[in-house]
Image (tube, rainbow, N blue to C red):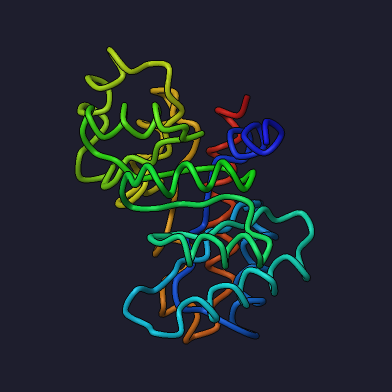
Length: 217
C-alpha cells in the first residue's frame, strides 16, 4: 500500500471518468495515457440501477488493457459497491463523504482510502478513521486561501483537491503541498467523447501531467 500511496503522490492527477464504457472508454484512457495520466477513477453513478456492473466492468477493462494505469472507484457509498470494486481489482476507493465504516472496510481489504471532506471536523474524522488521503470537495469553490487556513493545524494529512480544479488554479493547491488532484470535465467532457476528440484529451492530459511533474516527490 505504501508503494501505491507514493505512486499517487508522484503522478498526482486522477482522471475522473463518469458514464463512459466499452470502446469509448478504451479510446479515452489511451488518450489520457499518452498524455501522461496514470491514475483513473471510475465513478459509480448512483442514479443508475446498473452502476455496479457497469463500473466494475469498466475497471476490469482498463486493468486488462493498461497495465501501468492504477484504477479506483469513485462515489463509492456502500459496502456492496466497495466489495464489488475490490472484486473487480480496484486499487483505491474514493467517496464524496466521510463514512468511517467504508474507510475501515477499505483498509481491511488492503485498498487505499480517499474519502471526501470539507470542514476541519470532517477532515480530522477521516484521518483518524484511517484514510490514506483526504479529498477536499469542492476544492475549487473553497479555494486555496481556505486550504491554507486549514493546513495550519492539519498539516500532517495528505490532501487531494477535487471539483473545480483547472490548469489555472491547480498550482495554487500543489504549492500548498497537496498530494494530488481529481479532474473531471477538463479531461473527460462528454463532448470530447461524442466528437471523438481524443487529441484534445491528450493535450489537456499533458498540460496537467507536466504541471504535476514540477511538484512530484
